[in-house]
Image: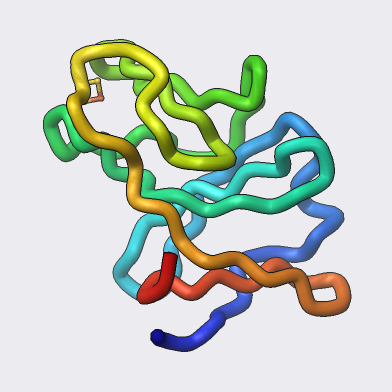
Amino acid sequence: MGEFKKALNVEYLKPGEIVKVDIGSTAVLIGNVDGEFYAVSNICPHSARPILEHKSSMHDNQVKCPHHGSIFDMATGDLVRGLATECLTKYAVRVDGGSVLVDVDAS
Ligand code: FES
């Protein structure tokens, strides 16, 4: 178990939005899925490339890798379909007051 670190303010991310945030040296995707915050790795397991550079919108609470189109469930990190054969690593998230905190050492 590591340490929860502040990733962003709650109001920064509306339902249906995702953003890439660097937490230490770990690139994390944070998504607002119907008001709940989730964090997964921003590195696609298909060929270890970053999925998102900034902020974007989700379709059906899923995130699509721009390189070869693998699609992942933002809430679980599960692979929905595509060339990847593994899921995205999921990280522990906590909301404390107006802040979204992520622990990149815990899932
Ligand atoms: S790098 Fe993501 S699908 Fe190929």
